Image (cartoon, rainbow, N blue to C red):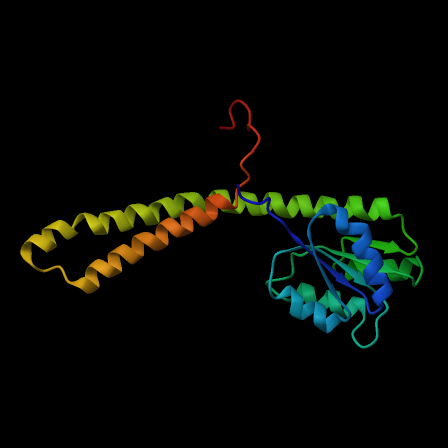
Length: 204
């Protein structure tokens, strides 16, 4: 039985105690929590992909949260990752405005309600996992087409074998092509939940 798909949540704060608190609050979501202590480390971590949301402290030495967010949004591979600012700097309107201008989807002042934060993060995790599932489903036709193409290549091998034109290199290449296509299909299917809900009448 395949494991349920998981998302990564990036926690960015220069204070270790704040990261520990965030991990305690979000651990019940059963997702992969990645904690870093600087804006530059956050940018490096995001390169790996797979992040549903970033929880980003505003006041940090060196690159602050606003600059970190701006750089995240300038990168093509990370610009769509949602950012939630967490700050002890207060709820002054100008700071919140800077946060939203930098591309954040939310701006939360400390101290915050753990239940509210967990609920907000959960929404972005669900959205990320649903989007990933849709992309995996949309990839199925191309995976099947690759298998059909590989099978078509194998179909001509008996004639080549009979004529003596079949070489070991050709056979190995066609078999490897089929193996790769089957492996890609299996990988796509394994990422889909086994208990997908019935889409309902007219949506099948």
